[in-house]
Image (cartoon, rainbow, N blue to C red; front, side, top):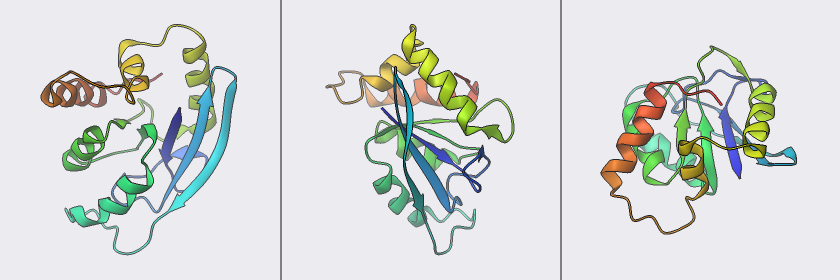
Length: 147
């Protein structure tokens, strides 16, 4: 499973999704995690409600299951969810990427919570109404679930 992190330093989750200049992508499984790539974005990334800046990020994140962000707007969250990518805001500010990767691997080795099992099934046909999926994921983001 691919997991992405909005970051300014490749160490912390400290960037707003829309204005992030960098998103690091990792592959994780029950054996561990490995760095895949650093996605970089330029142009006008100001937090100004300009939804056009999201298109390159959404395209680049294809294949990711989760994206961790410091903050995210409702429109961007909805667009990620529509692409079966779960946006998550860590409970702590400037959360450490490596610590979260370790916890995710441990979670995969055990019994993942329902929201993660659902995210892992993203490639399979989904008979759930899009509205239900949107509400479930928004509740996850609002509750700031930390793995």
